[in-house]
Image (cartoon, rainbow, N blue to C red):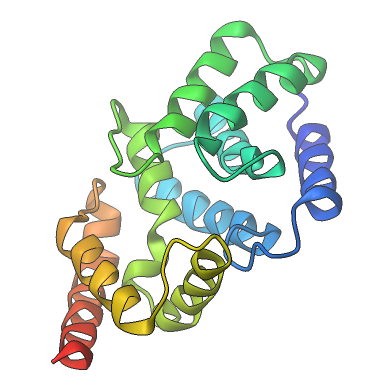
Length: 192
């Protein structure tokens, strides 16, 4: 696997081709999820080829936004299938990568440890200090798509999402659950 070449290729492609109105699903998001995935994976004992597959999945997981928002995970897999063979990824490796990408579709349904890690990394911000900053980016993006109209509607959506969300790895639970629950209470108090 020519990981570094694949990384440069997809990051450069996303930088140039992602629509400008994507204030959340941006190259910044990919870098954020990449750093979170790497940190969680190390804590969870992942290394070597598994780490390479995980980080490749992270790099490609939102590439479908190059085409459209709806069902972007499936399109991300198509993009991975199109380009990764050129970087010496085998069919089996690409299959594992696509499994991880599809696991990030909300509601998240991971089937193995690597899929659990990418899911937790993708929503790591829910339990971090920059939760409201990142959330505001998502709010702006969803408004562009006409998926939400008001701040009240956004806060209600966030409450439902936070109440239904759970982390999968011991690492994410330990590092993020308390803050995530505190954010939930903050938003609930805004609605009252």
